[in-house]
Image 1 (cartoon, helix red, strand yellow):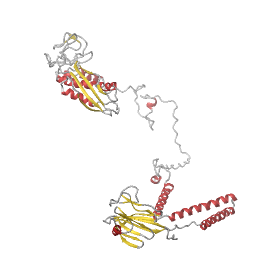
Image 2 (cartoon, one colour):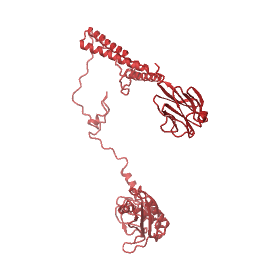
Image 3 (cartoon, rainbow, N blue to C red):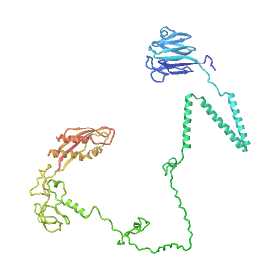
Image 4 (tube, rainbow, N blue to C red):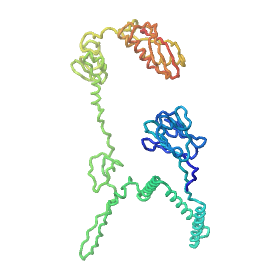
Length: 525
């Protein structure tokens, strides 16, 4: 049914390269806006129009169409076709700032080029409204209700005639009628859908049907990992073989004068005394065969002895002792070998002598320098205290670090170094003095190593080194430099200390701290 001519709607469409990109139909007066972004009716590129330009807007007598000087195309106002460019320059309506507005309604239409290129166009026209078809009219609803009640009564009567109680018959009749009505409604709803929706529903039904068929028809419920395996694979194989019983023997009939074979005498119940090397579970581990096994007639009736040691035997112990007791034969070996210039009871001596033997702690004479009087061990020539010949071993000059004077001092040794770390100063930011000192002094050993390394190369160096470092908001040290006032003039020590200061990690406080820390390096006395 067609609506009256006075009830019309405005239809607008955006066209790009003669292809409709968007179509809008409005029943109530509404703005039709154009813009590059935002909440506009049609999104268009920059065609020289203001932002959110309302090309059509509600007016006093319908709608008001606004056209610009760069627009081209054709419009039809009151049945007269006009060129847009000519209309904007000399047409009727209100003109302001290069734009001209004119009212539109009724049978007016137009195809407007938004710029000179004609790439983007706007089409508008008024279309009459059509009433949507009404299927569920009062007559249809009344007829459907009457049919539903008639179906309930008919089916209930059939169940009652079949011998069921009246209430059970009514329940079944109304239930079946309701299910039929529900199924019909679903079918009618599916029939009213568009083609794509119908295809989607058909695919969904096919997929669910396949899943149900797979679940209830193909699934057999047997575990394929349980022996002997799935039935489809092992159905033709025998799990066990049926043994065929041997045929029964036919009894023989005795004849006159036949001598029957005498049976063997029964075995004695007294156990036979048999010597065996193993008893109990160990002896019965091999099982019992058809025939008695051969036995050792001279076997002792006692448990077997434990197996002998195969690796750490007495001979192997002596070999290892000889390796440890061997005197080293070179001067270089005295720094890397095992010192063992005195033999103990039971060991074997080595050396440039007249033989070897087991020491008995008797008086043995040494013939090389470095051994005096008598000592334990076998007689023979000994090599002495790590010496392969007479003479004094040259160990080089004394190491740097000072000379030891007093009781118990003999020779030179490396001197310990001292690193005095005073309290830091400066702007601690969010840190406390104790927090700064705890982190720096925990790395005192690293700073001491920096000084010890260069002290070995340049004896006598020492002094004060003042380092200034900056702590970032994350607790990491960002920079470290010489703060001045240092008396230690050694670039290697300074570089090593600054490098290790950069590796310090403080708890993050979210603030910047600038700390000055003095390090005093000196040799131990």
